[in-house]
Image (tube, rainbow, N blue to C red):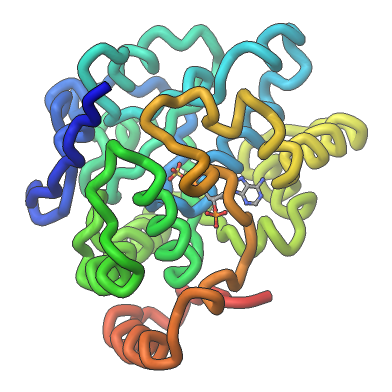
Length: 293
Ligand code: PPS
């Protein structure tokens, strides 16, 4: 079978994007959020799948056992801006979601989020991951995902990452833009991948208090054990092995799940250049990332 060519990035209102995320723009912008919707927002590779599954289990883990084994996470938590021929669009999937609340995922930078989410005062969970591990994860994802541009070699990819030439734009603008939003929008819970790795139970508690949930200790423990890296890697509902554009023999979607894997990729020179550039772009002293734990 002929392999379709890799797509190209283009400038979209100042942000690098791919057509598969802008094709349905009018419907995305006009999306009618409901007050009880919960938006899970991230820069790619920050822990979207992890937090989506935590929220899905907190709300719906006790429901119909069939759902747990047969409904894939990407159907339970639609990807709002996704739009590719012969697939249902993210907005259609979200419109048809039967659950209350609806859990909806997005990688959009804050300025692109449909206005109805703000008007309806929806709760939003933002997850951020340190830039070095995010870049490494994104690089390997680009290698295994034929729906993304060719990543090139590691040093080319890293350079593009630093210049914001990756789909959904600059990591730096994304994490800073959402952080600023949190200062004025109180229904935003800003989380860090590194904190989840350090103590997932504590982070689940934080999510529950933000969402007004009070699971029993047993329920909470069930969620915690179901969302470990190894459980999610084995679980076909969460490991993305059924998606055709992903080649897990090149690099699995559930790849390493660690903090600090960047040390296995960055050369000393790349690290120095990255740190210098980072200082220029990350001036807000309140937004701090951990590169190791
Ligand atoms: S995507 O494609 O943007 O939706 O990817 P996303 O889910 O945001 O990020 C994928 C990375 O998250 C890791 N991951 C986890 N780490 C630890 N524990 C759990 N449960 C978990 N689930 C997903 C996944 O392995 C990717 O990171 P890397 O570093 O590539 O392993």
